[in-house]
Length: 117
Image 1 (tube, helix red, strand yellow):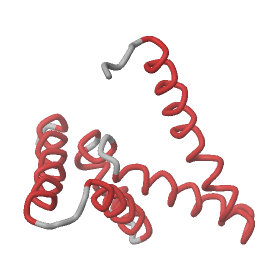
Image 2 (spheres, rainbow, N blue to C red):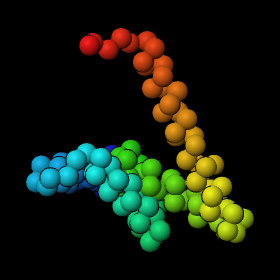
Image 3 (cartoon, rainbow, N blue to C red):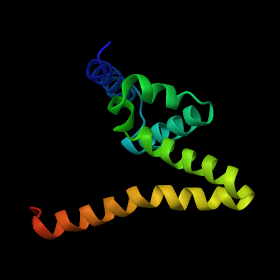
Image 4 (cartoon, helix red, strand yellow):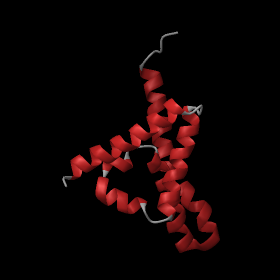
């Protein structure tokens, strides 16, 4: 099946399930955020997330689940290279790129646009 179609279907399924989670539970979006990050980390640890990336591409790399994947993948790679201390270096090395970009882009958007009060 075409990668674009699978990306759309899997990404839509993730978003749809997330919306159902918010609609039919008393949990907040913050709970959903943590659930998605932990789900991405668990799927990475079990070796399933790489398979999902091969099948769906951007459908699983765009949602916030990918942040759990990035953190866990960095920890696993650095732990293989550096042992126990690699556990800490992996999170900082790989995750810092996304966090830094988010902070810089957020600052620029706040500086360019004026929010209404």
